[in-house]
Length: 102
Image (tube, rainbow, N blue to C red):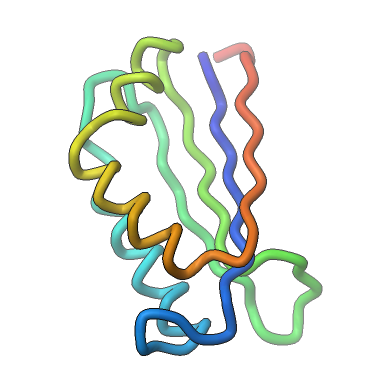
């Protein structure tokens, strides 16, 4: 199993919207990817909560059956479309992929 974790810090404003609005848009877009390809076992998106310490605004926690499933997800046209939005609104991005036990 491959765990894929991505964290984004968003720009204060981008695409005519606030950081909070873009975080909600990104969450909605990513949650629409839950069933894109066979082998997605888990896909969860979280937003930083006011009053709680956070160095990022949005987190994606996902698990894939294997590297092939993650690779298929990465190049899926719907995921590619989300990447364009992310590039427009992100200030920074951190990612970690690792193999883990099921």
